[in-house]
Length: 228
Image (spheres, rainbow, N blue to C red):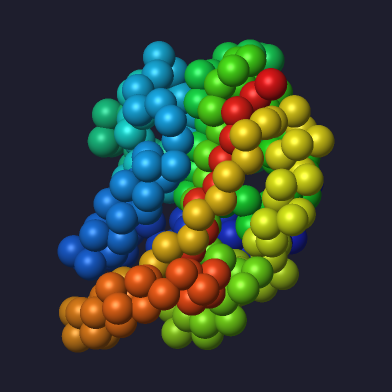
């Protein structure tokens, strides 16, 4: 039986899938892709796994990919875009060991019931020497993330989410068999509340990003490693 919190997430995304997100949200997708690609040393692989693939906005960014998502509607949207995907839980991946050259995802780890199990599963299906990388809300340091959950009206799927902390992630990645862990923090722009708010916060982001200490409180973080 699906856990209550995952069932809530699935229902929210099923209902969300028909909404138009707009140009600014598309800009956010491109920003996340750019930052994650800069974090990972390889730019193209034979086959990658996109965890929490959503509607397919980040499909095939490292070459041919398979997406997984809890939402059937998201997988249908991915397939409509020409992508490949299956309905699956990252904590119980339906793939054989050593299948993928790279495993990646955006905004998925902090939704997991057991982040250690999720990273362990991602590492299991990863080939030796393959890369693993994720992007997500910097909710271990940035309290504004919680405020935005209320403004975006998606608190019910963020409630109880895993707090991203570098020390914990580093330990989880290492114990799962990954090396070369690194983490970067970026972003203060708000994408989902119209052009005026986006332009203003983008300006603030450009100014404050030059102050290294303040990057610790950025809205998003990107982290990854390599299977030993």
